[in-house]
Image: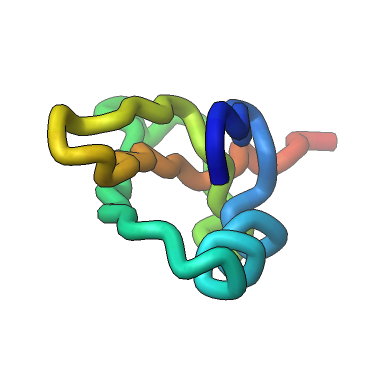
Length: 69
């Protein structure tokens, strides 16, 4: 998984690739502070991606905001 950038990608599409490649990673879910916007907790997107000193990836994921019509 050398130098892969998954920023903005849907987590459900990225996770199988990481498992297949045997990459070491951690996932942290963040939530919006404001409850003004409804969130779709079924669809998580990567909003931050970093690499730790030991080569382990850290992904921060957040729920997609639902469209109000």
